[in-house]
Length: 281
Image 1 (cartoon, rainbow, N blue to C red):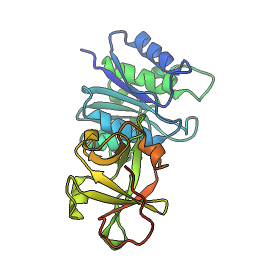
Image 2: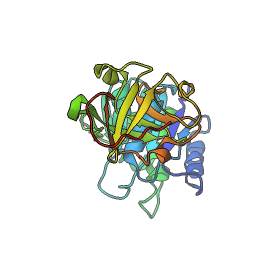
Image 3: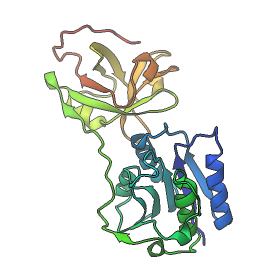
């Protein structure tokens, strides 16, 4: 039986790129179902693509995971397929695959996609989603080829890692956290979990002190958006188990002028800080 292909990219939908990859897969393996995870990753944002794939992989069916966020296309970066406990990961070896592969238990075999039989002939080298990754995903999903047919094996631990920032201790006993992701609603996911706030002796329902751009904000730690009134800010545990910042009915990213990669310091309101406090909500 064919396996589904779960497809993620930064192609967007203004050009024909997503449709063309679908078409290539359909011509090679017409019985294979393609599930679009997202094609709205910011152009060239390897970090954002990797995190989106990691968030999604645990909810997708076993099969083939095709991820194409590839600002290094046409360079010496490797094109790979990796075999894992939940199926195959196909894409550029630039870090976009690594966290999701680790999430599902790691890879026991990685190959370099070099066999010309499983590539589309093309005069250019700028659309590997169409010419290299799509065909490889199609033949793996339809069982027309084994992963070992696609190219030479690489060391199983050679996949390019993605460095995700870790939370760090900050002054006054606080935590320096980094914004990992901003969704389309403007909610901001951080690299901390509820346990990190609990280590500050904070509990759900408490106010949390957040310092960003030399201004401190008191923000309620709630259960959901409904824990605060319209227009008020709230920290909550999001659907992926991370602490996220939201503003009910509005965009937290716009309210706090914050984006992925920005750092904040999280602490207790009685932590002895002396800079200006501006209440939000």
